[in-house]
Image 1 (cartoon, rainbow, N blue to C red):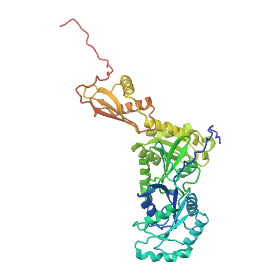
Image 2 (image 1 turned 90 degrees about the vertical axis):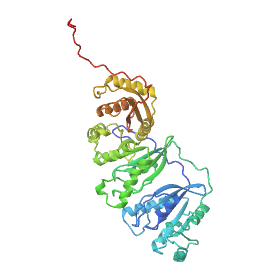
Image 3 (image 1 turned 120 degrees about the vertical axis):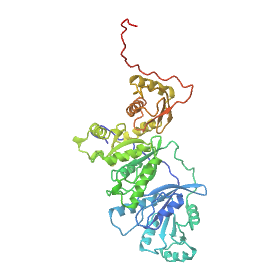
Image 4 (image 1 turned 45 degrees about the vertical axis):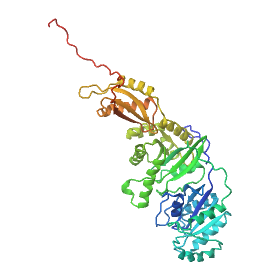
Length: 478
C-alpha cells in the first residue's frame, strides 16, 4: 500500500517459533489466573474475586521437570453474555485453545456444576485435541466428593485441585505432560532480542498495532478504553532481528484511576518499562500530543529507556491536513523535552508506515547502546570548551581534566573537573546537547555527570579560552 506521503509497506513481520503451549480455559472466576500465577511462580496475572478481570491472553514461560513450555491464561468463558466485549473474550479463549497443544479446562468446585461448563466442554471437544479437566477450589481431600456432579459432562477423569494452596498441582502437570507431543529442540529467543514496550493512554491503538505486527489477534481490540489490563509479552522476528513486544494496559491520569484493578494495571504498565529497552509511546493523531502522553514519555525517560513517539491512526487524518513535518514541529514546540525523540507515523489498521518503524527502532537502539572511546570524547570536549568557556566560580576558572563514558543503555558520560558541584545548569545543558549532537545520541536519555579529580598526578587540564583584559598603558612613571 502506498500513501500520499509516498510510504510503501514492507513485508509483514512473522511470529518466531514457540515452545509447546498449554492453555487454561474456564468460566469467569474459576481461578484460572491463580493457577497461572502458581505455575509460572510469579504474580504476573491480576487476581480478583470480580469475574472477568482477565480479558486478554496472558502468556509466560513455565517449567516442569526440566521441560519448558508456554502457559496461556485466558479471559473467562461466559456463553450468556452477548456484549461485543464478551464475544471478543470468547473468541480469544477459542483462539488460545486452538493454538495450544494441550488445554486445561478449569471448573469451579465451590460453585458446583453450571450449565455453562457443559457448553465449554462441548466447544473444547470440537477442537479434537487433548483436554485435561480439573475442578478447582477443593482445598482439602474431604471436598473431593464435590467432583461427582461434574462427571455428568461425560468425562472419564477429573482432577481435584486447589490452585490457591497448591494441592493436586503435581498430578495436574503430570497429566498435561503425558499428553504433550514428543519434545523437540526447543527454540530459544535470541539474547540479542530487543524488548519494546507499547505504552500510551487507553484506546490509542496499542493492541491493534501489536496484532498487525505479529499477524494474528494476540490482544483484544475494543473501543472501550482500558480493554487491555495485563502486560503481555509477544516474541516476533522482523528480518533477522528478534523482538519481544510488551503490550500494556493504558495509563490514565491518577485522579481518574479509581478501580484498584486499573491501578494494578497502571503499575504493571510502568513495570513493563522496567523490562523493556525501548518505549514506543503511541499518540492518537486525531487528538495530537497531550500532557498525559508527555507524562508517559517522561516515565520511560526517567527509567532510562530509549524513546520513540509513534503517531497512530495517521490514515484517519484528512488528506489536506496530513503534514508530518508540521505535526512533529508542533510536538517539539509544545514539549521541548521531547525534541530529540524520533517520531514515526503509522496506521495499526492498515499497516501504513510500519516499514519505517523497525528500521527507526534499530537506529534508536544503536544510539542507546553506543559506546564512545575516551580519546574521541575528550577531543569533542576540547572543541566544546574552546567554543564556549564555562562561567567562572568565585572568580576562578572551571577546568575540565578529562571525560569518559561510564555507562550505556542509557549512555552516561562522566566529566572530571575542579568544581563538579558548581558547573552552571545552562552550561551543563550546553555540554549535554553538544554531546548528543556529536555522537548521535538522539532518543536516549543521555546523562552527563561531574566528578572531582583527587589524584595528585591529575592530567593537564583542558585549555580555557583566554578572556580579553584591559591593559594599563605604561606612561614612563615608576
